[in-house]
Image (cartoon, rainbow, N blue to C red; front, side):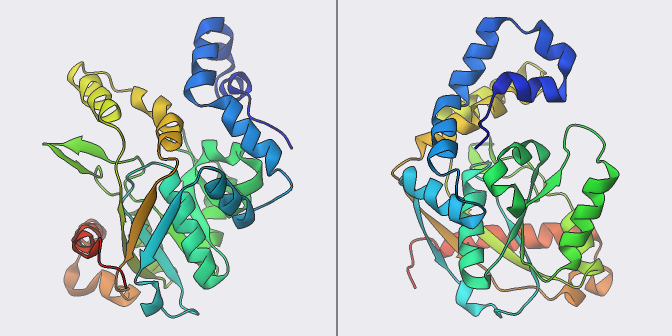
Length: 275
């Protein structure tokens, strides 16, 4: 099983930057993203693929979850699950596991950098957030929506931030609404209960206060993921919104996006109420 090498990942994205970075920076990045621990998981469970690998990794990290509301969905329905994004990765693994358990398959819309995770890249629909999407990436995206496989998406694109004292997603992007309408998929709002450390949110706000546009705090997402080890989380699945109602009454894709977001956050009232 091929393992993760921070230097090679940077070199693949930006060769000039990789050559200019001092050795101590590379070593710091290796520690920050837990390169050793990630590679241990890849090595230990390298013979597994797809959702089997996801389940083994969650068990290895002692991460559990409880989902409510999935039973209200048609097992043969074509859905897009639109969720808030508290963790920026771990939530995607858990939601993928839950959806796959119920439907038998799943695809998750992700940053294309995650395609370096060989055992689970078959579950991913990559989106390039650091440059123009290549033609093949766009084709794969459309093919996924045209299929019958359920799709999980996090419309904010980035994990939640603390804003005005409250941890909430950044603005949701409307592309999932446009695709759901175009390919006849109902949209299911999802609320994932969780949050990252105060360090992460403080770093994010400090970076913004300095006017730095680069999301420096994203370097710590893997570290934040490993901090969740031994925890249990709750996922609340909402009522599906029929695709033909998303843009009803002259509603724009942006307005429909806001509607789905509001319904997702309204689901947190159900957190703690076990079915």
